[in-house]
Image (cartoon, rainbow, N blue to C red; front, side, top):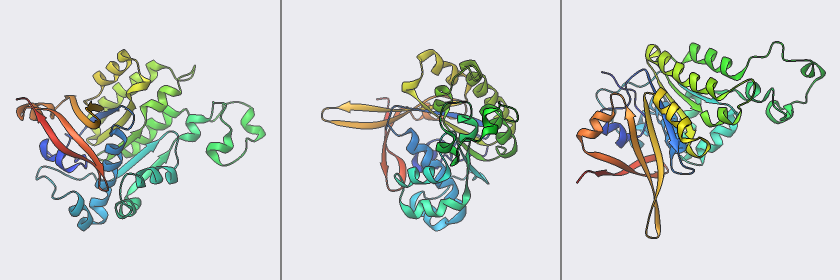
Length: 278
């Protein structure tokens, strides 16, 4: 079976090249533990592989024989525009990688749909003041979940899509968007993704969800990667654990791997070591 690379070289090597096509993966992280950095690295490396193969080989190495690069990379944000996202990525990866990836990453900013019914001033997310017609009602407006679904229908097939983030949707819960809507979105997304055949990564901050809510999302998705801090003596270490993951967890279990130790350097997120059952 072909795999779609996550873009993290050593991790892709362990899981035979990446994720099975048609997969939705939750990236669940403690603050600063590496979930966002994993997401940024995945987007950048999959884009650079198309634009600068020499640079890709330098930072990633050879693709696994079963890996197939996604033709397109899409980054979907509910709160940030393209310039802010690129700035955030540049804090993690070196400038050469970010510059090489820019033209191959399509950014969709959903902030107009996300903030339209909130008290947030229009100028903050649209760069313009509220007009009189905007006070007359909600006619002609598309809600954020509908806009997201429409975009995915057009662009998700066969491609890498990053959703940043489910946490923002939870923060936007209201009469127009309930928790049940968000949970059903993830469940429907997993079903549709099997037909699309691409890879969807969705970021979730663990601190914003109740255990039961997180359990609902994990049950709906195909796989979950959790990013945690571990303390030992005077040092803290970032670690990653693979939760239930169809087509991937069985390979990790065969290697007796229980946890990945991770690091963040100029090439982005990386696996520095693995912990095995002894």
